[in-house]
Length: 72
Image (cartoon, rainbow, N blue to C red; front, side, top):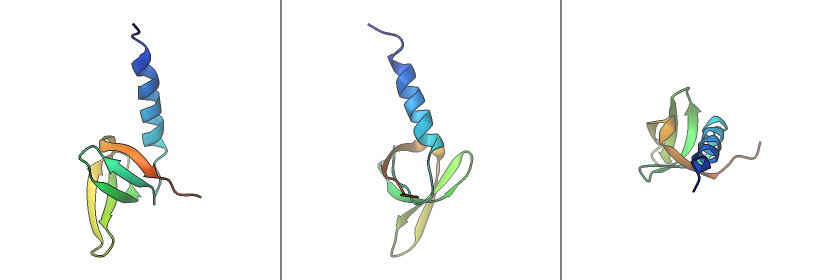
């Protein structure tokens, strides 16, 4: 039984959120897939539909995972 297992997970998550970059493909906690087009300190703008250029703004904390990173 360990009380410290959550620390590693929190550090990994913080690192992932800090390393978000434009053009990364991400999944939100709400199940929305999108491509990052703009990053602000507390928000991220995602393009969710290429054909209509639909964009949504979500809280940075709502990003669950990066599904594809840019190669820069």
